[in-house]
Length: 275
Image 1 (cartoon, helix red, strand yellow):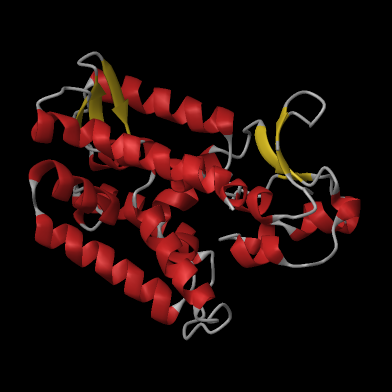
Image 2 (cartoon, rainbow, N blue to C red; image 1 turned 60 degrees about the vertical axis):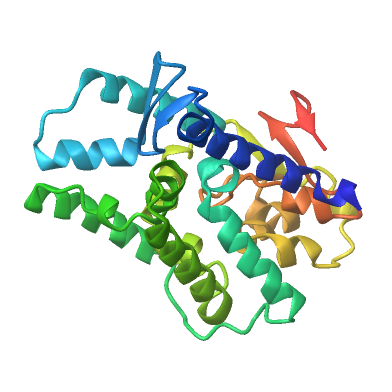
């Protein structure tokens, strides 16, 4: 049973460790990370800044500290190297909320019962609107409503009402209205980091796609199932690597596939792979 949840458990452990790093200071007096995921300092020495936040800050025309620029470059290089929406699948705390809503929908058999229909390109429209709005207004637009940092502020600063509203609203939206609605159709942060990660070298690969028995489990559990078909079916001569910017590199397809079709690959399974 646990073998079918290896990467899920690793992701949860990573997400919880990131959250612990931020709350360890105010809760336990242990200084690991100060700030939030928008901007932080780790071990009192390493600055890290959300690249999307930095671009909005630059758009406002306000002075930006050198440390913030260095921190954003570090974050950008990391996600560009790894690839895909790794931030969404392995770091973002909202992922636990949306995964929970999707899991409950599966349990109740609501996989295809979506009330809303939204174009997935809406995320990019919102992303551009946030940058343009920051330029026009002089305010970092997305941070006014960003549920990621509402949750972070809740944990770090004790602003419980804001965090509760953000979590419950996204859960109810994904559960009742549109599966994977928030992350897959609205959130500009995931859309942005998907583009940043486009040149990344880490991919999920359908290395044994001829062994596929068409059970459909990978499509059922994947939060972005549309990314699977080209690599799994080899449509239009597509290679075995899932290179779509929407792939979270979450590993759920690896976990649930009885035929062990998928594995993580770095520049091809011959170079390095994790089953």
